[in-house]
Length: 369
Image 1 (cartoon, one colour):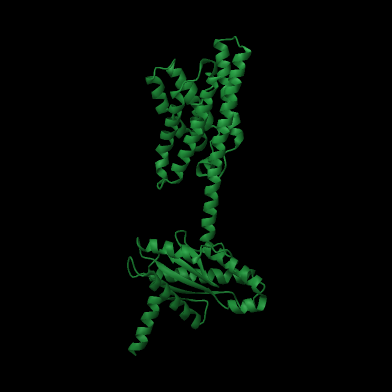
Image 2: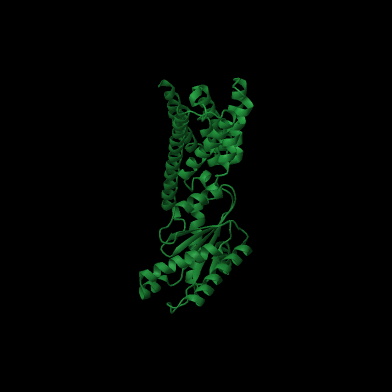
């Protein structure tokens, strides 16, 4: 009876190792480490399954293949094949019976078979690993080995069949536990990402909120000069008063979508608050910024002139722009100047843009006279 405790102990050990590996993975700072850490940990886990050989009657199905199965499912064929290097070398150095056959049958075959079920979404944790994969792999490998064994030794007894059935069930249950643990960890990760996204996202427009924008803008400003656009919807209060807050909210959503689709790919836009939006641009040339702002104003005006049936006044935007003087410039100063420029755009007629440097130059010329 004690012979049945060996595979059960190995199964418990494998579950524990899987738990430790998941915790290490969740705390890794640099994801590229996973490229070599995953095969390393998988290989070590397989070796630990080989340290305590199974009794002869139970030796057809070995738990050393399970870590290889997991590597193939989660990380694909390359990681799975690399995971066989350590246990393969160990098996050869340990002088196991027919070591090269062991490498092919117990390690390489599981690596290649499990890779057939690989999906990129399993690795990124955006999709759970289906439980059916564990059943399919275990049963497939079991029957392949059973047929191989029967070919060499065609005599089968009931005792032998029951022992192999016990090992098959142990392997399946252990594999299912490993998959369930990984899926639970992935679901926790997805929930955390969703909560982080909600914390950094404006609930109405689905744009980033001001807090996340300021964090990204500060980081960008340490690497390169930037420009800040303050964008305001003209006559928004009158629109709300005339048509109600529900239509006002829809206008904000539509405006967010238009701006998101109109900005340059490398730029970043967020909702500032109320009817205002804030844009981080990597452009700093005054001529380019003026062309950019003019494009946004024209795009918004054209879109709503073609689609809006509610507003009596045209739906347009006003823009104020300020540019960093140098790296590590004060972000609050840039945003404040962009806000002043926006005020000038609103004051001088709306549906236009004001570049703060140009506004300062014009003011200086007026003072000179």
